[in-house]
Length: 93
Image (cartoon, rainbow, N blue to C red; front, side, top):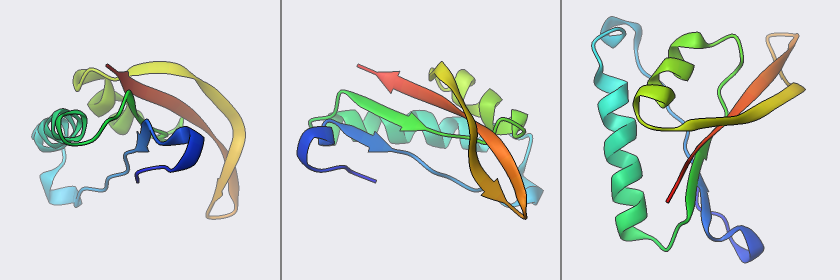
């Protein structure tokens, strides 16, 4: 999602992959390619993603794609009635 106004140099990346395609490196390639395309296409300085802290597979995808963990947002979301932490990962160029 591209942001406007004062956050117009940032974009948020979200993704989902069907289970039959897990553990094949597909999403790492997609995230890497999307980030490259986003920086080449828009005047962005950062692309970020906020995976649930419990989603270690997503964390690995982001790290393998070159994103860096900038912090932990404690108790920031609720999913299926459970309050969860999120990580803030970003690719800054």
